[in-house]
Amino acid sequence: MGLYGSSDKFVDPRAKRPEIKVCHHCGVLKTSEESVKRCWKCGKYYKKVGRLKFVILAVGLVCSVVFIHLNFDGIVEEVYDINEMVAIDSIYDIDLSTANIWAHESIINAVYLGIVPNSEYSDYSMFVTRAEFAAFVVTFYEVVLAKPIMGHVSFFDTSDVNVQKVAYIGIMNGIDENNFSPDEFITREQVAVVLSRLSYAVGVPLLFGSVTFDDGEYISYQAVHAVGQMQMAGIMGGVGYNMFAPHRFFSYEQTIVAMLRLYENVLTFFE
Image (cartoon, rainbow, N blue to C red; front, side, top):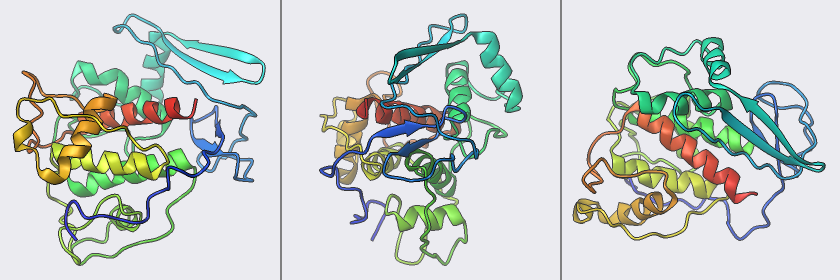
């Protein structure tokens, strides 16, 4: 078992796709197969909706952000202008002073949707460790599937519950059978592999795409397929000059942007 070890705990994509319902209070998804009427995250009742069509339209900081939901009666549109988004920023007490401007809107939206494990980081441009990325994966998984991960896998070098959970569902593995190396920074190609597995685990297998980056020859053999999927789906792009930089580390703000794009891709799949 290694960084790119396989797992047999993924969701079978050939299984019948469940109807998706959404909590209009906090954005958590649930399936119609569950009998729970209250949202497990915020405790409020789910609204009765059929298919969710959630589109975020934003052009610069002066444009409005539009959320569109499709229900039994037709299309219901709720509009939040930029002032309301700033209010959301204040409600969640998010300090974006350390984040690049291109990541501000994605950070606010991701926090609003509940797919960010911590709404504030000391420096959004800092690199993410493997343990911290595991927290992002677990949060995303539990929000999208609307149920907590109950199992755990133990490691000698960490007792982090998110590490134990992410290993249990097979999305991230240890560097060997007994150690996870939680404080090691995660690389861009490793992120691609993990996000590919995460999408598959929530029932949305990504389409295969060819890698067209000029430095594609430096991508590890085990990660080439996942990088192609990320490029094809638009979840991860290059770092400029048509380079992917597979061994460069990943930052908090890049992680949040990628997670939000994956979330939007999941919603599109279930439309």
